[in-house]
Image 1 (cartoon, one colour):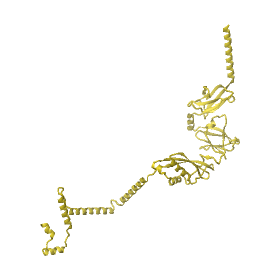
Image 2 (image 1 turned 180 degrees about the vertical axis):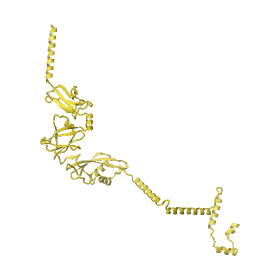
Image 3 (image 1 turned 60 degrees about the vertical axis):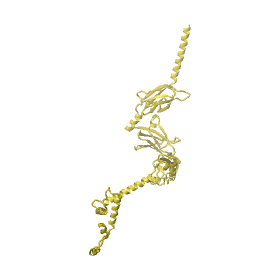
Length: 413
C-alpha cells in the first residue's frame, strides 16, 4: 500500500514539473541574431553572452545565432556580443525584448578592417540629419573626405552615399557645427537608418580644428624672431643649466587678441613664467575661420629654452677671423709672387750679415777655459771693438815722422 502512495506522489511531482517546463517554454522568446561584416559576409568570429548569466551562444556558418530565452517582466535583460579575439570586452550591447527578437548587426574584426582598407572596399550607408529638436535639415552636404563623393539631404533630412573605411564622412549645414564620422555607426544596425543630430554654432565656442588656422603676423618665421628678441633667460635657471621646452596653450579671439595663456607642459617655474609672459605680450594674430566664418581658436605653441655660451661664440669668431687672415696672406704671397721673393731674399741677406758680424766680433771659447780666461777674452774683444779706424792721411804723417801707435806698442810688449 505504501508503495502505491509513493508512485502516486512521484507521478504528481513529475506532472507538476512537466507542466512548469511547458509553461516556461511557452513564456520563452525565440531570438534570431544575424551578424555580418561591412561587405555583407557572415561574421562567424563572434558569440553572444546574456548579461548576469553564464549562458553563451555561437553563430552558425551563416553568421546566425538562435536561442530561446524567457524575457523578465520586471526588468530589462541585456545581451552582449564579443569577438573571439577579445573575450573580455564586448563590441555590441543590446536589450532582449519580445517584440524585437530578430536583430541584425554589422561587426568587423581587425583583420576585416585591414583587408577593407587595403582593398578600399565601398558600401552604401544611409542616414537622416536633424537638429537638436529633431527637425529635419534639408540641403545638408554629406561628403566622403578626400574622394570627391558627396550628396545632399532631401526634405526629410535623408541621404544615401557610398562610404569606405579609409575616409571620414563630413556633414555640413548652414548655421550648424560640422560633424566628422566614420562608417562604423552607420553599419552597426542596418535595419535602421542612422540618426545624426547637428548642433547650432555658438559665438562663444572654442574650435580646436577648423578650415583655416590662426597665424602669427608674417608667419612662424616672424614668431621665432619675436621669441629670440624677447626671451630673457632667468639667471638662476642659467646658473643651474636648466634647458628644455615649455608647451603653451592659448586662445586666439575673433579680433586676433591672445587670451587664456596656460602652461600644458611645464619645465621649471621661472621658465614657465617667462613663457607665459611671452605669450601674453604677443601682437594680435590673424584669427582662424571655418567655412568663411571667423571663430575663436585654441592653439598650442612650444617655446624652447637653450643656453648659449658667449665664450664659444667669441672663440669661434676669432678662429674664423684668424683662418681668413691666414688665407688672405697665403693667397697674396704665392710661389710666383715677386713680393714673396723679395721677402725671402732680404731675410737671407740679413742672416748672412748677422752671421758675418758674429764670426768677426766673437771668439770661439773652449769649454775647458776658466771663468777668468772667459772674462779676459771678453775684455780683449771689447777693446778690439773700441779701436777706431784711423784716417789714411793721419797714418801717412805718422809713418813719415816715425810716430808709432800706443796700441801696437802694447801688443808688442
